Length: 77
Image 1 (tube, one colour):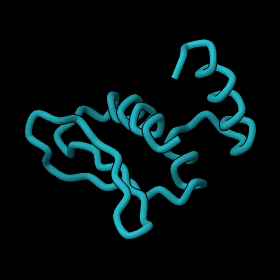
Image 2 (cartoon, one colour):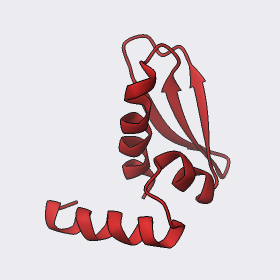
Image 3 (cartoon, helix red, strand yellow):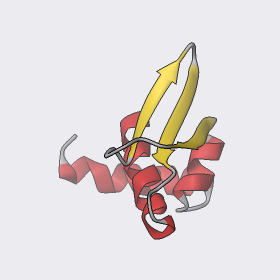
Image 4 (cartoon, helix red, strand yellow):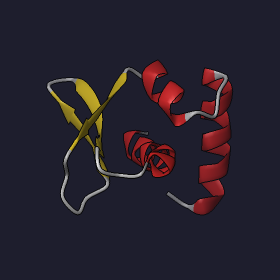
């Protein structure tokens, strides 16, 4: 997706869910956030049998998890 389209899309999603929290947006989009050991990976998005998941490395620093979830949300949209 082109950079010029990303900012308006993010603003639209934030307005729709009335938050900029990626955790709250994921919840509103019915995307389950799970934590597990991923080795060198920080996270990933997947859809399995109609269920959507963001999986975050349980060893990732707490301060990085907001960014990781936001990044993976980008794959969901």
